[in-house]
Length: 473
Image (cartoon, rainbow, N blue to C red; front, top):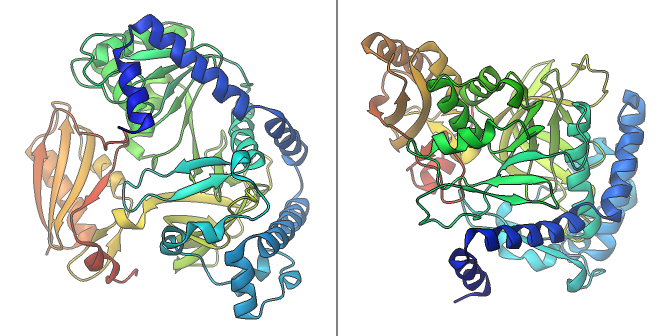
């Protein structure tokens, strides 16, 4: 039995009051690690640069990029060898416009030889080890230095500050922590982290039978904001609406989402029930991408944290859409330069946000390439959640691609879904996927989450070679 497994078993056997002590002790350690001196330094810098002019933003990002390249090519074996092999002088990379000269980094390279990407200038005891969940592939073994960890939480607090919320204010957290034993059958399905001033809600106990308990706790007017997976927050909000319970003075001032693609029906349900703005954050475990939604709904790229390029699938004079190619600017211990994230997004070329911040804007984050529908004629189609607006009576939906010409659509109806609604849905699918795609509908009371608690809007049962051999029109 591994140490983590033994610790979890010991925790599960504790009475709830002792679990609360354990969670608070872990929360104290986590709070110190997240919000120490590195965080304070990064947050002060973010406050200084937040309202820079467009020219200042570009100059600042180019400077940070030069520093990241210099560090990577002198201390990281992968980049030292890559630049020598390609005949690239690191000093010739003066800014973002020079990045395309550097070959892209694939996930496979990271999986095959993670040690080559680790800086030789850090001892292991100073590093923070992380493993990605591997939901759609092999997990990655990552390390972060304390400074990068500080930047990660500083950009989160930057976003909260845009909504008038500071560090230390009480909130409801919906993350993937295993804080309630899986075999527990009675509430509370949450635990309190007192040093972090947050209540951690379990994502693994949400069901039609238990959502009432979650709703009762969230109806207490003690949580300034909510934060976490949008699908889980959406479930609670849908229950509140179903039973006709209004939050009143328990309404959060904002709802911050992350870790999943924010789908239209989750956003709409949350905003309708809470009367709060949903502000999403796009980030990753590799610490090489970060974009924050402001109150105007625009995703502002954190240019102090990363550079985002787009490998084009579609392009106009106004925007470019395709795979996100990310370069991290903060993690010297394991830098990712021109990394193929596997995510698809749309980058504006000219648009500026009316909130007053002069940063490049992402408009639409479609999700992962692996979660695209492949049509019989070879097209890849992403971001299909919006089509469920065209058919009333659907709370939530998941699309499962069984074969290249067959989909199963799992629906959670709200009682209004009828033959007319299905007909509209048929038309919406056909207009996007063509008439050769067979579609079967399956009604469910609840759509299961992944083992890590996340919701997947599209589940592909096609084998990997079949997916990767399809074009990306």
